[in-house]
Length: 420
Image 1 (spheres, one colour):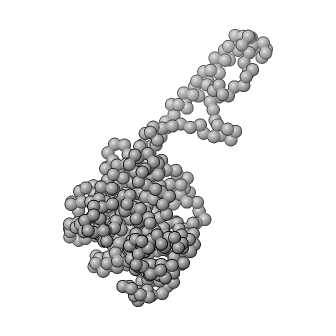
Image 2 (cartoon, helix red, strand yellow):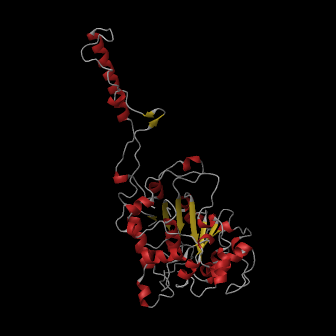
Image 3 (cartoon, rainbow, N blue to C red):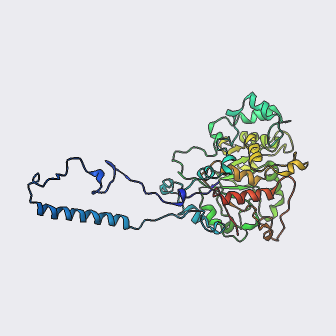
C-alpha cells in the first residue's frame, strides 16, 4: 500500500457526463436539449420566414452541430493502462501507480484507479479470505472482561495465556485515545484519497536494485527489524513512516548488524512504532516507553526505551497489533504445515509478513520490496551484507508459504511485488 493492485473496471473505459453548473452538459444538438413544440412540422410561418431560407438555415445548423460532435469525439483522450495486463513481473511502480505523487494538494485530489479492496472483491479466492472489518490494532477502548477471557485461552502472539493481567491492563490504559485505534494520527489536512504504502523488507534482492526513489515516492513507508539505510539509500530510500518489530527482533538486529551500520532503530518526529506482541516483553516495553521510565521487570529490566525510540514519549507514536488480528492472519493466509509437525508453540508469521498484511488491511495500494521471491537463491539473505549469505529456513516462520502468498497476491493485482 499499497500496503495493492488497481485498474479500470472490466479492462475498459467508461465516459460519464460531466456535471455543469446547471446540470449535466449535453451536446447542443441532442434530443434531450429540445422542448416539445419547438418545431412546427407543417411549415415555417410561425417564424415568418420563407421555407427555402429556413431550410438553408436548418442545414447550416445541422452541419455546425456535426462539426462540434466530430471535434469532441476526435479529441485525444488520455487512457490509463490496466496495471495488471501484460507482463506483471516487469511492471514498474510508476506504471502501477500512475504519475508520481507530490506533497502538494494535487496528490490529495487523485483517486485510486483500482483500490485493493476492489481487487479483493473481484477475486474468487481472496474475497473469501480478506475481512477488512477485522480490528488491526489493540487499544484501551477494546478491553473488556470478555476479551480477557477470550485471549487468555491462547498463547502469545495470539493471546494472553500466562501473561500478567496487571501488565496488560496497565499498558492498555495508556492507549486510551481513539488515535491508538488508527494507524494514522488525524491531522488538519484532508488525507490523500489514494493512500499508497511501500513495505520494505530486508531481502538481498534489494542490493543494487536502485529502488530508493520509487520507495520514497509512496505516501507511507514501512520498515522492520534490521532496517539499515545509511550507505544503501539508492536501493532502499530514506523515508520511514512506520517501524515494525518485536522486542526480540529489534534488540537482536541492533546486536547482530551493528558492525554493518544498524546502530539505532529509525527515529523521527512523525514516525510511529508498531509493536508485535509476541510475549510480555512488548507490553512492558510499550508501557515504559509511554511513561518514560525504565522497564520494571522481565528480560529487558532496566532498559530505557528512550534509547531506542527517542525522547518523545507520546502514546500516539506507539501502535500495538491486536492478537486476534495476528491469529486471523495465521488462520486465513499463513496456516503452515509446521503447526502439525510439532512446531505449533514457536510458529508465527514473520515480522515482514505481519507488516505487509497490516498494510493490505489499512490502505489503498501496497508495494512490497525486499520480500522473498521464487528466485531467492540468487541473492543474499539481507541486502546490507558485504558477502553473500544464503537464506536459511527455520521452524518459527514458513518463508516458502509466505513467498507463495506474495506471488498469488501479486498475480491477483492486490499488491505489487518487486521482482528481478
